[in-house]
Amino acid sequence: MKGAIISLGSKSSQMVADAMKRYFKTVDMIQLKEIEVSMGKDGGILYQGNPLKDYDCIYVKGSFRYANLLASIANLLEGKVPYMPIAGSAFTIVHNKLLTHLALQQHNIPMPKTYVSSTVEAAKELLDKVNYPIVMKFPEGTQGKGVMFADSKSSAASLLDALVALNQPFIIQEYIETGGTDVRALVVGGKVVAAMKRKAQKEDKRSNIHAGGTGESVELTRELINIALDTAKALKVDVCGVDILESPLGPLVIEANISPGLQGLSKAVSVDVPNEIARHFFLETEAVVKKNKHHEEKKALAEMKLEDINGSASQEVITNLQFRGDRILLPEIVTKLCKFDDRKEYVLKIKKGKLELEEFKI
Ligand SMILES: Nc1ncnc2c1ncn2[C@@H]1O[C@H](COP(=O)(O)OP(=O)(O)O)[C@@H](O)[C@H]1O
Ligand SMILES: [Mg+2]
Image 1: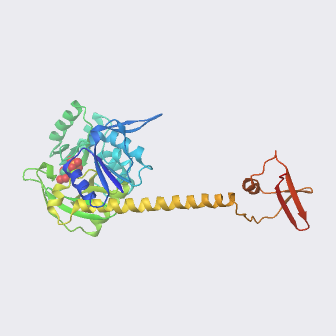
Image 2 (image 1 turned 120 degrees about the vertical axis):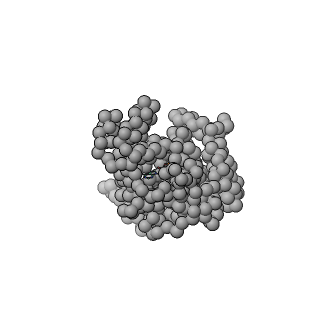
Image 3 (image 1 turned 90 degrees about the vertical axis):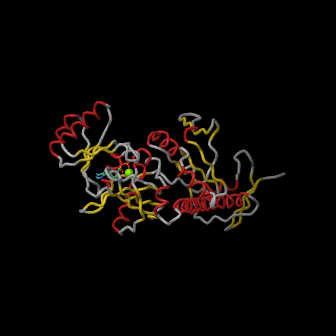
């Protein structure tokens, strides 16, 4: 079976590709930036100017900056490539925290109270009502870079002014006190295969590894596992990192990541994380390919049976006869099978209780 990863070529993508080579016959690393998508007549996906080859499994991933391209690729490949771990719809939803929260809300997955305002005035009014501290986030930020904390209304108001001046969309979220920690759970095919507790550096509240946080392996409770699995399911993804804050009132999901970093997690846990992902890809692909093959075999068999009928072997059709007045009407299948032609002549051999019909030959 042939596998491929379409990505920006990060270390994490390379790790998964290397692990996939243990299972797939070939694994191609395809650079996202060298892909072109066109739609309409003769549209399709070009890689380095040539049509994308056929694969049994394609893992599409990349940063939010490429969300439109990623979504286009995944949507066009869906239904053509037997197994795609990430649904096309996920690239728009998961790369945006607001859309993610809306999807989670629909599935009753717990999250911190989150607000979105349509106008600056509405946002300012909101700042009068909320409890401090609060968090302000870029909907499309990653690695902790778009996350800001405001301890008071005055600091929130100045952040708000800056965001508005920069034309930067944002969401406002209640701050959950966790001592600068969160949980990153990696879901792979309906299982949490690895999890770590991350702790922010001193003087920081963001626990991202990229922001200097440290990770330690953690055993998750059933509740946390279920929340992580529900999140992946709600977002229609087979592989994702789920970030969870453990609040005094229970776990709350803050985001999901469909391009999760694997280096920090691999260091923290004893599981071979890329191998878990690669093995799942292989098993899923194998199952879909087998199912498709079975389906095709059944179709071919049905066609062969029809050919059988069309060949020399005679076929019995059991039916009752329809009469139009005193005339006999034969079922349509008879016309199809015998391939009689209304321009030819036929001999009817008639006996009581028996009728034979054959082409008249001199
Ligand atoms: N509502 C919150 N309350 C407390 N800490 C938060 C909250 N939201 C985010 N954080 C902290 O900031 C980090 C980054 O936030 P997250 O929403 O995951 O954005 P990113 O996409 O940048 O990782 C989290 O890992 C967590 O440590
Ligand atoms: Mg995060």
